[in-house]
Length: 204
Length: 197
Image (tube, rainbow over all chains, first blue to last red; front, side, top):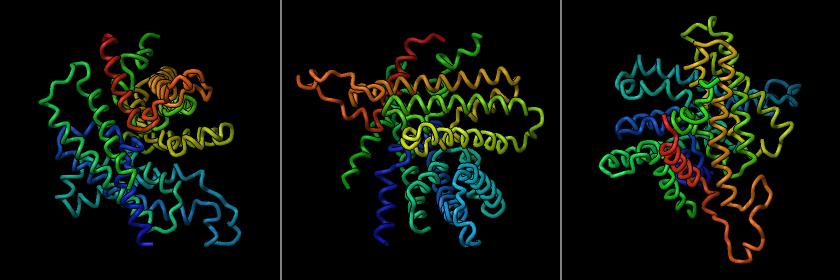
Protein backbone atom coordinates (compact mmCIF):
# COMPACT_ATOMS: atom_id res chain seq x y z
CA UNK A 1 0.00 0.00 0.00
CA UNK A 2 2.72 2.48 1.03
CA UNK A 3 4.91 1.48 -1.90
CA UNK A 4 1.92 1.86 -4.23
CA UNK A 5 1.44 5.40 -3.04
CA UNK A 6 5.12 6.19 -3.37
CA UNK A 7 5.09 4.74 -6.90
CA UNK A 8 2.16 6.90 -7.92
CA UNK A 9 3.94 9.93 -6.52
CA UNK A 10 7.21 9.36 -8.36
CA UNK A 11 5.39 8.41 -11.54
CA UNK A 12 3.37 11.59 -11.59
CA UNK A 13 6.36 13.84 -10.89
CA UNK A 14 8.68 12.47 -13.54
CA UNK A 15 7.14 10.03 -15.98
CA UNK A 16 3.58 11.28 -16.39
CA UNK A 17 4.67 14.87 -16.00
CA UNK A 18 1.67 17.13 -16.65
CA UNK A 19 3.53 19.48 -18.97
CA UNK A 20 5.87 17.19 -20.86
CA UNK A 21 3.71 14.11 -21.26
CA UNK A 22 0.21 15.58 -21.48
CA UNK A 23 0.77 19.26 -22.33
CA UNK A 24 -1.56 20.37 -19.56
CA UNK A 25 -1.47 23.96 -18.39
CA UNK A 26 0.61 24.98 -21.39
CA UNK A 27 -1.01 28.39 -21.73
CA UNK A 28 0.04 29.72 -18.36
CA UNK A 29 3.28 27.74 -18.63
CA UNK A 30 4.22 29.73 -21.71
CA UNK A 31 2.78 33.04 -20.54
CA UNK A 32 4.15 33.20 -16.99
CA UNK A 33 7.70 31.96 -17.46
CA UNK A 34 9.54 35.18 -18.18
CA UNK A 35 11.37 35.05 -14.85
CA UNK A 36 12.05 32.37 -12.27
CA UNK A 37 10.46 34.08 -9.30
CA UNK A 38 6.97 34.53 -10.72
CA UNK A 39 7.17 31.13 -12.38
CA UNK A 40 7.93 29.56 -9.01
CA UNK A 41 5.00 31.44 -7.45
CA UNK A 42 2.58 30.19 -10.07
CA UNK A 43 4.01 26.68 -9.75
CA UNK A 44 3.41 26.73 -5.99
CA UNK A 45 -0.14 27.94 -6.49
CA UNK A 46 -0.91 25.20 -9.03
CA UNK A 47 0.65 22.63 -6.73
CA UNK A 48 -1.44 23.84 -3.81
CA UNK A 49 -4.74 24.01 -5.69
CA UNK A 50 -4.18 20.54 -7.17
CA UNK A 51 -3.49 19.12 -3.72
CA UNK A 52 -6.78 20.49 -2.46
CA UNK A 53 -9.08 19.92 -5.43
CA UNK A 54 -8.13 16.42 -6.55
CA UNK A 55 -8.92 14.65 -3.23
CA UNK A 56 -12.15 16.65 -2.89
CA UNK A 57 -13.21 15.69 -6.40
CA UNK A 58 -12.16 12.11 -5.66
CA UNK A 59 -14.54 11.96 -2.71
CA UNK A 60 -17.33 13.55 -4.76
CA UNK A 61 -16.74 11.11 -7.58
CA UNK A 62 -16.62 8.11 -5.27
CA UNK A 63 -19.61 8.93 -3.09
CA UNK A 64 -21.89 10.86 -5.45
CA UNK A 65 -21.24 10.45 -9.14
CA UNK A 66 -19.99 6.97 -10.01
CA UNK A 67 -22.36 4.18 -10.95
CA UNK A 68 -23.68 2.70 -7.71
CA UNK A 69 -21.95 5.41 -5.69
CA UNK A 70 -25.15 6.49 -4.00
CA UNK A 71 -25.85 3.12 -2.35
CA UNK A 72 -24.75 4.62 0.97
CA UNK A 73 -27.90 6.78 0.84
CA UNK A 74 -30.28 3.99 0.00
CA UNK A 75 -30.17 0.68 -1.84
CA UNK A 76 -32.63 2.02 -4.39
CA UNK A 77 -29.88 4.15 -6.00
CA UNK A 78 -27.65 1.15 -6.79
CA UNK A 79 -28.21 1.57 -10.53
CA UNK A 80 -27.88 5.36 -10.64
CA UNK A 81 -24.97 6.65 -12.69
CA UNK A 82 -24.39 10.39 -12.49
CA UNK A 83 -20.94 10.37 -14.06
CA UNK A 84 -22.16 12.43 -17.05
CA UNK A 85 -22.37 15.30 -14.58
CA UNK A 86 -18.75 14.96 -13.51
CA UNK A 87 -17.36 17.62 -15.89
CA UNK A 88 -19.67 20.33 -14.71
CA UNK A 89 -19.36 19.37 -11.03
CA UNK A 90 -15.55 19.20 -11.16
CA UNK A 91 -15.21 22.62 -12.76
CA UNK A 92 -17.71 24.10 -10.30
CA UNK A 93 -15.83 22.60 -7.35
CA UNK A 94 -12.53 23.92 -8.69
CA UNK A 95 -13.87 27.42 -9.29
CA UNK A 96 -15.47 27.39 -5.83
CA UNK A 97 -12.36 26.18 -4.02
CA UNK A 98 -10.15 28.68 -5.80
CA UNK A 99 -12.49 31.49 -4.82
CA UNK A 100 -12.58 30.22 -1.23
CA UNK A 101 -8.79 29.91 -1.01
CA UNK A 102 -8.41 33.43 -2.30
CA UNK A 103 -10.68 34.78 0.42
CA UNK A 104 -9.05 32.72 3.18
CA UNK A 105 -5.56 33.78 2.10
CA UNK A 106 -6.54 37.41 1.94
CA UNK A 107 -7.98 37.32 5.45
CA UNK A 108 -5.53 35.10 7.36
CA UNK A 109 -2.34 34.70 5.34
CA UNK A 110 -1.56 38.09 3.81
CA UNK A 111 2.05 37.12 3.02
CA UNK A 112 0.98 34.08 1.05
CA UNK A 113 -1.74 36.14 -0.58
CA UNK A 114 0.84 38.61 -1.83
CA UNK A 115 2.81 35.84 -3.54
CA UNK A 116 0.04 33.55 -4.78
CA UNK A 117 -2.93 35.91 -4.86
CA UNK A 118 -2.53 37.25 -8.36
CA UNK A 119 -2.29 33.75 -9.79
CA UNK A 120 -5.28 32.22 -8.09
CA UNK A 121 -7.99 33.55 -10.46
CA UNK A 122 -5.84 32.44 -13.40
CA UNK A 123 -5.72 28.96 -12.01
CA UNK A 124 -9.46 28.27 -12.09
CA UNK A 125 -9.21 27.96 -15.86
CA UNK A 126 -5.81 26.25 -15.93
CA UNK A 127 -6.19 22.91 -17.69
CA UNK A 128 -3.65 21.27 -15.38
CA UNK A 129 -6.15 21.55 -12.53
CA UNK A 130 -9.18 20.15 -14.35
CA UNK A 131 -6.89 17.66 -16.05
CA UNK A 132 -5.70 16.44 -12.64
CA UNK A 133 -9.27 15.70 -11.59
CA UNK A 134 -10.16 14.03 -14.89
CA UNK A 135 -7.08 11.79 -14.88
CA UNK A 136 -7.81 10.93 -11.26
CA UNK A 137 -11.28 9.80 -12.33
CA UNK A 138 -9.93 7.83 -15.27
CA UNK A 139 -7.32 6.01 -13.20
CA UNK A 140 -9.72 4.72 -10.55
CA UNK A 141 -7.52 5.13 -7.49
CA UNK A 142 -8.55 2.74 -4.68
CA UNK A 143 -8.28 5.19 -1.76
CA UNK A 144 -8.19 8.91 -1.17
CA UNK A 145 -4.53 8.64 -0.11
CA UNK A 146 -3.61 7.42 -3.60
CA UNK A 147 -5.38 10.37 -5.17
CA UNK A 148 -3.60 12.73 -2.77
CA UNK A 149 -0.22 11.29 -3.74
CA UNK A 150 -1.15 11.70 -7.39
CA UNK A 151 -2.20 15.32 -6.81
CA UNK A 152 0.93 16.30 -4.90
CA UNK A 153 3.13 14.52 -7.42
CA UNK A 154 1.53 16.18 -10.43
CA UNK A 155 1.73 19.55 -8.72
CA UNK A 156 5.42 19.16 -7.97
CA UNK A 157 6.01 17.95 -11.50
CA UNK A 158 4.35 21.07 -12.87
CA UNK A 159 6.32 23.29 -10.49
CA UNK A 160 9.55 21.61 -11.58
CA UNK A 161 8.72 22.02 -15.25
CA UNK A 162 7.82 25.71 -15.13
CA UNK A 163 10.77 26.64 -12.90
CA UNK A 164 13.27 24.84 -15.11
CA UNK A 165 11.74 26.40 -18.19
CA UNK A 166 11.79 29.91 -16.72
CA UNK A 167 15.44 29.52 -15.77
CA UNK A 168 16.31 28.47 -19.30
CA UNK A 169 14.31 31.36 -20.71
CA UNK A 170 16.20 33.86 -18.56
CA UNK A 171 19.45 32.55 -20.01
CA UNK A 172 18.02 32.64 -23.49
CA UNK A 173 18.07 36.42 -23.52
CA UNK A 174 21.80 36.24 -24.21
CA UNK A 175 21.54 33.68 -26.99
CA UNK A 176 21.46 34.42 -30.68
CA UNK A 177 18.21 33.05 -32.07
CA UNK A 178 16.97 33.51 -35.65
CA UNK A 179 14.66 36.55 -35.45
CA UNK A 180 11.54 34.75 -36.71
CA UNK A 181 12.00 31.99 -34.18
CA UNK A 182 12.30 34.26 -31.15
CA UNK A 183 9.63 34.19 -28.47
CA UNK A 184 7.05 31.48 -28.88
CA UNK A 185 8.76 29.43 -31.55
CA UNK A 186 11.86 28.74 -29.52
CA UNK A 187 9.76 28.30 -26.38
CA UNK A 188 7.93 25.34 -27.92
CA UNK A 189 11.10 23.76 -29.17
CA UNK A 190 12.76 24.07 -25.76
CA UNK A 191 9.73 22.51 -24.10
CA UNK A 192 9.97 19.67 -26.59
CA UNK A 193 13.63 19.13 -25.79
CA UNK A 194 12.94 19.27 -22.05
CA UNK A 195 10.22 16.69 -22.63
CA UNK A 196 12.69 14.40 -24.34
CA UNK A 197 14.98 14.81 -21.36
CA UNK A 198 12.18 13.80 -19.03
CA UNK A 199 11.51 10.72 -21.13
CA UNK A 200 14.77 9.34 -19.80
CA UNK A 201 12.84 8.67 -16.58
CA UNK A 202 10.64 6.19 -18.44
CA UNK A 203 13.08 3.43 -17.64
CA UNK A 204 12.70 3.87 -13.90
CA UNK B 1 -16.32 38.50 -44.50
CA UNK B 2 -12.65 39.33 -44.57
CA UNK B 3 -12.44 40.23 -40.92
CA UNK B 4 -13.52 36.73 -39.95
CA UNK B 5 -10.71 35.08 -41.87
CA UNK B 6 -7.99 36.43 -39.59
CA UNK B 7 -7.96 33.45 -37.22
CA UNK B 8 -7.03 31.14 -40.07
CA UNK B 9 -3.73 32.89 -40.73
CA UNK B 10 -2.46 36.11 -39.22
CA UNK B 11 -4.45 35.93 -35.98
CA UNK B 12 -4.25 32.17 -35.61
CA UNK B 13 -5.14 31.25 -32.01
CA UNK B 14 -2.32 28.74 -31.56
CA UNK B 15 0.44 30.28 -33.64
CA UNK B 16 -0.02 33.95 -32.81
CA UNK B 17 -2.23 34.34 -29.75
CA UNK B 18 -0.77 31.24 -27.96
CA UNK B 19 -4.20 30.16 -26.80
CA UNK B 20 -5.49 26.66 -26.42
CA UNK B 21 -2.24 24.80 -26.74
CA UNK B 22 -3.11 22.91 -23.59
CA UNK B 23 -5.22 20.04 -24.74
CA UNK B 24 -4.34 20.38 -28.38
CA UNK B 25 -1.08 18.59 -28.74
CA UNK B 26 -1.79 15.31 -27.05
CA UNK B 27 -4.35 14.37 -29.69
CA UNK B 28 -2.18 14.87 -32.75
CA UNK B 29 -0.35 11.55 -32.98
CA UNK B 30 -2.90 10.50 -35.61
CA UNK B 31 -5.02 12.36 -38.11
CA UNK B 32 -8.45 10.99 -37.20
CA UNK B 33 -8.62 11.98 -33.51
CA UNK B 34 -7.12 15.34 -34.42
CA UNK B 35 -9.94 16.02 -36.89
CA UNK B 36 -12.56 14.90 -34.37
CA UNK B 37 -11.00 17.14 -31.74
CA UNK B 38 -10.83 20.09 -34.14
CA UNK B 39 -14.50 19.73 -35.04
CA UNK B 40 -15.53 19.40 -31.39
CA UNK B 41 -13.68 22.56 -30.43
CA UNK B 42 -15.18 24.41 -33.41
CA UNK B 43 -18.71 23.37 -32.45
CA UNK B 44 -18.26 24.22 -28.77
CA UNK B 45 -16.58 27.53 -29.54
CA UNK B 46 -19.21 28.62 -32.07
CA UNK B 47 -22.21 27.58 -29.95
CA UNK B 48 -20.98 29.05 -26.69
CA UNK B 49 -19.96 32.27 -28.42
CA UNK B 50 -23.46 32.50 -29.90
CA UNK B 51 -25.27 31.87 -26.62
CA UNK B 52 -23.07 34.12 -24.50
CA UNK B 53 -23.57 36.84 -27.05
CA UNK B 54 -27.36 36.36 -26.84
CA UNK B 55 -27.15 36.79 -23.08
CA UNK B 56 -24.50 39.49 -23.08
CA UNK B 57 -26.79 42.23 -21.84
CA UNK B 58 -28.27 40.20 -19.00
CA UNK B 59 -25.13 38.66 -17.46
CA UNK B 60 -23.93 40.63 -14.44
CA UNK B 61 -20.26 41.42 -15.06
CA UNK B 62 -19.16 40.18 -11.63
CA UNK B 63 -20.22 36.59 -12.18
CA UNK B 64 -19.64 36.38 -15.91
CA UNK B 65 -16.77 33.88 -15.62
CA UNK B 66 -18.95 31.35 -13.81
CA UNK B 67 -21.76 31.83 -16.34
CA UNK B 68 -19.32 31.35 -19.19
CA UNK B 69 -17.88 28.21 -17.61
CA UNK B 70 -21.36 26.76 -17.19
CA UNK B 71 -22.41 27.49 -20.77
CA UNK B 72 -19.17 26.03 -22.12
CA UNK B 73 -19.37 22.92 -19.97
CA UNK B 74 -22.96 22.38 -21.10
CA UNK B 75 -21.83 22.20 -24.73
CA UNK B 76 -18.78 20.11 -23.87
CA UNK B 77 -20.94 17.54 -22.11
CA UNK B 78 -23.22 17.49 -25.15
CA UNK B 79 -20.28 16.93 -27.51
CA UNK B 80 -18.82 14.31 -25.17
CA UNK B 81 -22.04 12.32 -25.07
CA UNK B 82 -22.45 12.57 -28.87
CA UNK B 83 -18.90 11.32 -29.40
CA UNK B 84 -19.44 8.46 -26.96
CA UNK B 85 -22.54 7.32 -28.80
CA UNK B 86 -21.49 7.78 -32.44
CA UNK B 87 -17.67 7.72 -32.46
CA UNK B 88 -16.89 5.49 -29.51
CA UNK B 89 -13.33 4.53 -30.54
CA UNK B 90 -12.27 8.12 -31.10
CA UNK B 91 -13.87 9.22 -27.86
CA UNK B 92 -11.88 6.51 -26.01
CA UNK B 93 -8.72 7.73 -27.71
CA UNK B 94 -9.34 11.37 -26.84
CA UNK B 95 -10.25 10.36 -23.24
CA UNK B 96 -9.96 13.33 -20.90
CA UNK B 97 -9.08 15.79 -23.62
CA UNK B 98 -12.69 16.24 -24.65
CA UNK B 99 -13.48 17.33 -21.09
CA UNK B 100 -10.52 19.64 -21.16
CA UNK B 101 -12.14 21.67 -23.93
CA UNK B 102 -13.87 23.47 -21.04
CA UNK B 103 -10.62 25.02 -19.93
CA UNK B 104 -9.37 25.60 -23.45
CA UNK B 105 -8.30 29.22 -23.40
CA UNK B 106 -9.41 29.84 -26.99
CA UNK B 107 -13.01 29.51 -25.94
CA UNK B 108 -12.78 31.60 -22.79
CA UNK B 109 -10.64 34.10 -24.66
CA UNK B 110 -13.15 34.52 -27.48
CA UNK B 111 -16.04 34.79 -25.04
CA UNK B 112 -14.28 37.53 -23.11
CA UNK B 113 -12.84 39.39 -26.06
CA UNK B 114 -15.57 39.05 -28.64
CA UNK B 115 -18.91 37.58 -27.62
CA UNK B 116 -19.47 39.96 -24.71
CA UNK B 117 -19.41 42.97 -27.02
CA UNK B 118 -20.76 41.77 -30.37
CA UNK B 119 -24.02 40.61 -31.94
CA UNK B 120 -24.92 36.87 -31.88
CA UNK B 121 -24.40 36.13 -35.57
CA UNK B 122 -21.00 37.72 -35.87
CA UNK B 123 -20.02 35.98 -32.60
CA UNK B 124 -21.08 32.67 -34.12
CA UNK B 125 -18.85 33.35 -37.13
CA UNK B 126 -15.97 34.47 -34.94
CA UNK B 127 -16.20 31.37 -32.76
CA UNK B 128 -16.35 29.11 -35.77
CA UNK B 129 -13.37 30.72 -37.46
CA UNK B 130 -11.25 30.58 -34.33
CA UNK B 131 -12.16 26.94 -33.87
CA UNK B 132 -11.21 26.24 -37.47
CA UNK B 133 -7.95 28.17 -37.15
CA UNK B 134 -7.12 25.98 -34.16
CA UNK B 135 -8.19 22.89 -36.09
CA UNK B 136 -6.00 23.80 -39.04
CA UNK B 137 -2.83 23.72 -36.94
CA UNK B 138 -3.97 20.51 -35.26
CA UNK B 139 -4.55 18.79 -38.59
CA UNK B 140 -1.24 19.95 -40.07
CA UNK B 141 0.68 18.67 -37.04
CA UNK B 142 -1.24 15.40 -37.03
CA UNK B 143 -0.67 14.95 -40.77
CA UNK B 144 3.09 15.06 -40.40
CA UNK B 145 3.19 13.05 -37.20
CA UNK B 146 1.09 10.24 -38.60
CA UNK B 147 2.76 10.23 -42.02
CA UNK B 148 6.32 10.22 -40.71
CA UNK B 149 5.66 8.36 -37.47
CA UNK B 150 3.53 5.45 -38.60
CA UNK B 151 3.56 5.71 -42.39
CA UNK B 152 -0.22 5.90 -42.49
CA UNK B 153 -2.87 8.56 -43.05
CA UNK B 154 -6.36 8.23 -41.63
CA UNK B 155 -5.32 4.68 -40.65
CA UNK B 156 -4.57 3.75 -44.30
CA UNK B 157 -1.05 2.83 -45.17
CA UNK B 158 0.45 5.33 -47.60
CA UNK B 159 4.12 4.41 -47.47
CA UNK B 160 4.41 1.49 -49.93
CA UNK B 161 5.65 -1.88 -48.71
CA UNK B 162 8.49 -1.78 -51.22
CA UNK B 163 9.99 1.15 -49.29
CA UNK B 164 10.03 -0.87 -46.09
CA UNK B 165 11.70 -3.80 -47.80
CA UNK B 166 14.22 -1.34 -49.22
CA UNK B 167 15.10 -0.34 -45.67
CA UNK B 168 12.79 2.64 -44.97
CA UNK B 169 11.93 2.96 -41.28
CA UNK B 170 9.16 4.87 -39.55
CA UNK B 171 10.42 7.68 -37.36
CA UNK B 172 9.31 6.50 -33.93
CA UNK B 173 10.22 9.84 -32.40
CA UNK B 174 7.31 11.47 -34.24
CA UNK B 175 4.73 9.57 -32.21
CA UNK B 176 6.23 10.67 -28.90
CA UNK B 177 4.76 13.78 -27.23
CA UNK B 178 7.83 16.09 -27.41
CA UNK B 179 7.80 15.98 -31.20
CA UNK B 180 4.40 17.72 -31.28
CA UNK B 181 5.93 20.71 -29.52
CA UNK B 182 8.91 20.84 -31.81
CA UNK B 183 6.65 20.64 -34.87
CA UNK B 184 4.52 23.52 -33.58
CA UNK B 185 7.67 25.55 -32.96
CA UNK B 186 8.72 24.91 -36.53
CA UNK B 187 5.29 25.83 -37.89
CA UNK B 188 5.43 29.10 -35.97
CA UNK B 189 8.83 29.76 -37.43
CA UNK B 190 7.62 29.12 -40.97
CA UNK B 191 4.42 31.10 -40.59
CA UNK B 192 6.25 34.09 -39.16
CA UNK B 193 8.55 34.03 -42.13
CA UNK B 194 5.80 33.83 -44.72
CA UNK B 195 2.55 35.39 -43.42
CA UNK B 196 2.49 39.17 -43.78
CA UNK B 197 0.92 41.21 -41.05
